[in-house]
Image (cartoon, rainbow, N blue to C red; front, side, top):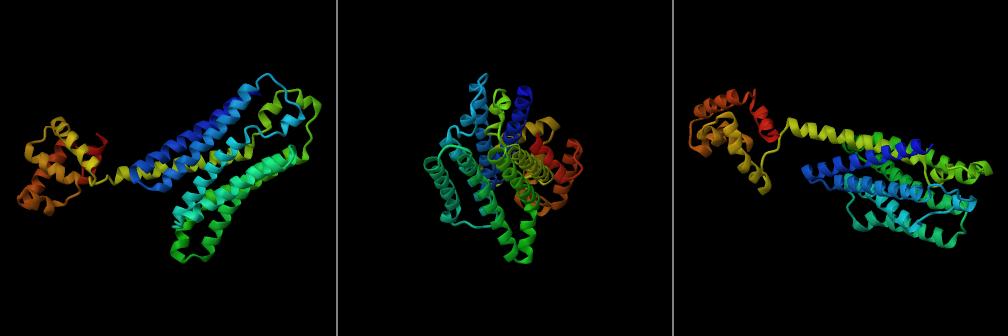
Length: 321
């Protein structure tokens, strides 16, 4: 059992880290803050899993009693991390739907954290407290899904098409949220652990773990990775044109090496720079004060030397190198 839960936890944590890294890379490429929010959400959920991993490591070899089975370990750390995960999802959703009021973005997180603090301080320890504490997470998810459904119903036809792109994560979220609630209700409120169960290592791995929640994180990680691969593939097919200072510095530092690699002349180097910048034959001819026919002839030579079939293939090859 210990090996199985270890491998299972490592799998979920690895998926979250991979999704966080891929969406952070998307932010670096696109400068879309939405991807930064998604990356933060996956990374914070990774930290939340680390707390569970820490509890299992520190409690290894011990057998908690029934009261410890229903206790909430490190409640404030878990509340803050859960708030961070859910708020990241909410802010990303607001950005996608173009809802940019700051108060509207932070209000659900404030309500969530306040509810968690009140539950920890005002409710007696036991199954009811634990169920309410973890159910606030599902309440936040239901709020996000409900808001998305409301926006879809009142949206215009073109806007509905944009919202429908979230169909897969929304359906996964709705189905698995129902599974999370059912699992929590059964494990915390209905099922009564036996003495034999409490004397085993199982409570250490089950007390604060929700399989459905982990599965939701895994599904969303896969969807994020799939989206990232699609965006990067598109980025490869349609290479960027250097616009920022950093991109121009990259061109300056690599174009000489590229020309040396393929034996390009100085004139071909100048034309290559224009091709990388996305300029057509006419603009290149105007910039270099040459005839369009001359530019086409040099471009043909460059394509032959580099083995590229088209100007766009040449751009891709330059950025790849």
